[in-house]
Length: 394
Image (cartoon, helix red, strand yellow):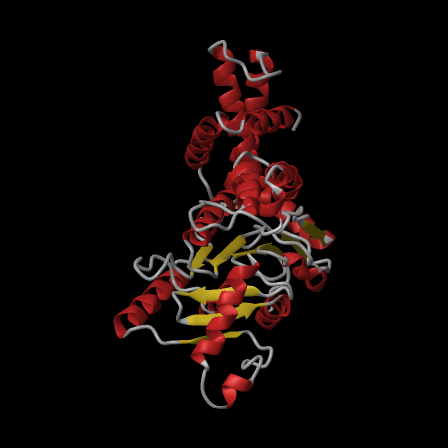
C-alpha cells in the first residue's frame, strides 16, 4: 500500500504548488487535516445532507446496557476500500447490536461514481466522533473505529479522494480526537500497510487495537478490483462473519492471512530470477494486537447478545444438517444439538430483552444469521464447523 500513500502525499505538493506552501514539507504542521479542492456546489450540498442524515440516525444511549457505536471509514477512493468499510460496518453492527449506531464514511469509488456515503474528510470524521461522544455514556459504552486505506512507512494512513484531497491520519491524530471528545473505551482497527505504528499510542487499559501489519511491514490485497484487503477479508468476512468474537477472530485471521501470504511468497519464489529482481519479495505482514484489560471486559459485554445469536444460528444450521443426514463433522447427535440450541436461544432471548428486543426480533436475527452460515459454509466449512462445535460447550 506504500505506493498509494506516495500518490496521496504527492497530491499535497500539486495542490500547494505556489508560494511558501510549496516549500513546506508538512503544510499542516503535524495536525490532522487535508489540503482540499472544494466540491462543486451540488456535490457539497449532497455531502452535507448525507452527513446530517448519518448523524441524525444515531440512536440514543440505553442506560444499563453496554451500547456500541461503530465508525468505519475508507480513506482512499479505490472500490476495495469503500466495500471493506461498508461490509465491515455490517458485520460489526450485527455483532455489537449497533445497526442504528453505525456511521460509514468513504472517499468514494472514483470520479465517475456517485457518492453513497458522506466523504471521509477530517471534519466529517471528527464530527462523527463528536456526535457519538455526545450520545454515548463514556463510563458504560464502547466505540469501535475501523479505518482502511493505503499506509506509509511512518505510520500515516493516507487520505485521498478523486485527486482533489490529500492528507493523512496518524495514530496521534486519532488519539487526540478521541481524547478531545472524551471517549474512554474503544476498539481501534486499522487496515493499512505499516499500521503497527498504531499499537504503542493505543496501548492502554481502555483500548483494544488491531492492525493489519507490523510497523515495519506491508499488508496485502489492496488492489482496486478486490472486494476486501487480506486483513479485512480474514478478520470480518471469514472469522467474525463465521461467528467468532473479535479477539478470537483476530487470532483466527492471523492464521488465514499467513496461509494467503505463504501462497504469495511461493508464487514469487517460483518466478525467474530476472522477474524476482524487479518485484519486491512479499514478506509476512505480521498483524499486531494490543489488549487493554478494561476495554476487553467492555467488549465481552458488548458482544454477548451478538455471540448468543451467532451460537443459536450456527447450532440451528448444524441441527438442520444432522436431521437431513448431512451432519457437520462431529455434530451428528440430534438430541445434544437440540438441547444446545434451546439453551443458546434462551440466552439470546434473555440478552435481547435487556436490550429492548422482543423474542420475535431475536428469533428473526437468529434466522438471518443461520442463513448467513448456510451461505458461508461452502467456502468456509472449517470456520462454521469450528464455531458450532464451540457453541456446543457454551
